[in-house]
Amino acid sequence: MTLKANISFFYLVIVLLMLEGCSVIMSLHGKKDADFLVLTIGQKRDVVVKKLGEPEKTSTQDGIREDIYQVQRGNSPDPGRALGHAALDAITLGAWELIGTPVEGLQGKSYIVKTKYDENDNLIYCTIVEGQLEKMKKEKSTNKDGP
Image (cartoon, rainbow, N blue to C red; front, top):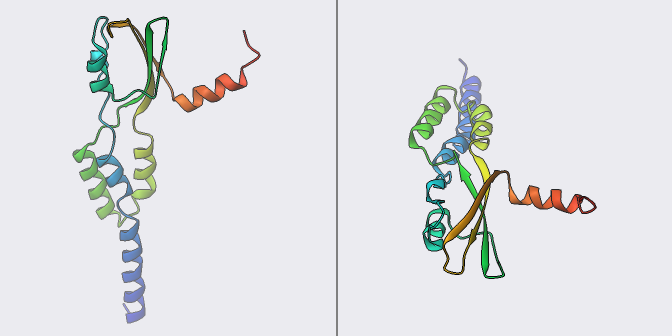
């Protein structure tokens, strides 16, 4: 190899190494799975909030409190997955990122959890729907003339 070819190869390796890491970082920074087992009738609201996090929206009507949560499952941080991405990055000189990053972007599912509590903050109703709050808001706004 000539000096020019060596320098070109060196720059190519540097550029590919700079691209490396998105899938590795994404697999280490997922969200912990929401614990749906906490959603049992009679459960105290503070326990539900501790497990699911603060609700996106809270409202009260006739003494009944309704909370709406946006949660994820299937995208928890995984060092093993990150190690696999790092190994494939090293073997392919960073080209794996073209596949690994979109794969990590598709990890997990979003759920909307609606809960209702009585005047003593005991869970009396719960429903879980797959989807995202923003998507549902848009669908409701376009269906204003519906039933």
